[in-house]
Length: 145
Image 1 (cartoon, rainbow, N blue to C red):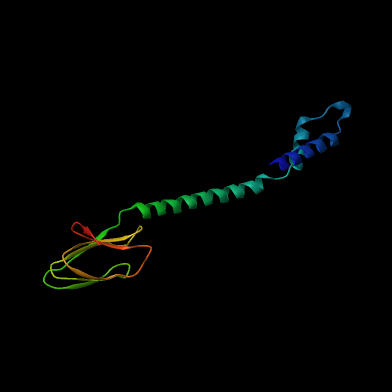
Image 2 (cartoon, rainbow, N blue to C red; image 1 turned 30 degrees about the vertical axis):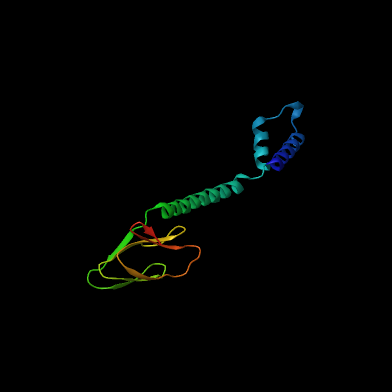
């Protein structure tokens, strides 16, 4: 910005020295036309930058909005129940579970957060896929394993 002001001052000084008016008189309109011709066309360079900046801001806002929705929207829960049979289930993290008779398992469609939680009523056998960063927790009645 400072450089642009210095260029502007130089152009004005050149215009003042190059304006030859008889008897000290000069035409304001003619001087203004000369000044406009000599000024650099900065608007042609600034407008595309502003347009790109606005487009980038809109894109960033859209991505942030989608991310906020993804992180804070409730995750739908799946519930699997068995009656007189045993049933095998594979969770989204590839954990395999065998539900015993008259058991119910509730788990999210996708695990999100720092741990993987499921809720169990009855009996089940778990083969948990390893993930040290996201421990697997089973809530059964008042106990969390």
